[in-house]
Image (tube, rainbow, N blue to C red; front, side, top):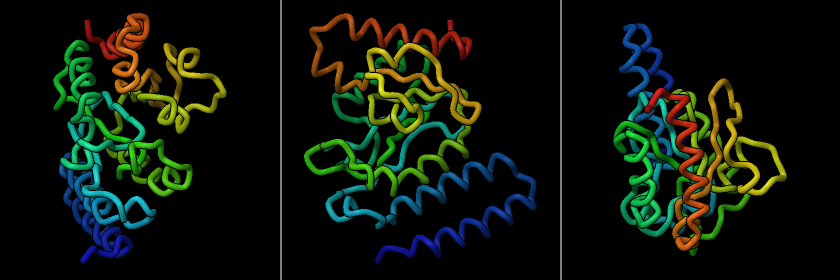
Length: 215
């Protein structure tokens, strides 16, 4: 039986108060993220809970300075319970390595934590149901840079009517965190003959690398 999210949240708050009294900052962050993941894993807030195989909270370094955020899990992610493990995930991993990071040095997640049927874009109500989980992850991990993958993810952080081609390439600010919007890896795969798209993504990532001091 799934646990009551409100009860879980109360338990998390009590646990964090105790850890804070101990003055163990790193343990507090780690425990906070893991406790948040437990809440996400038991979430029943929207209809996607009825069609999912696994919830996909996120994966990576809890002290990451770089965070990647996509729109929602796909079929492979739904089966494995981990973000970006299919073809798009393999491409993202190559991009991360080209940026001189290892995958376990960054944090990867999605706006929506459950797979929408047929890999459609998440609906506004689904995003609204999941948004607080993502914002809590960002607050706890506190990255220096967020890279949003695709227009759906970018729209959550950047209010603009511009399409991705015009929106990408420049940093935006979100609660003192730099946000770099770029194309989703799945879009690159669908348009793999378009070398200009790959060039634009790499230009975006070079700006992120420069900001983070990667040469």
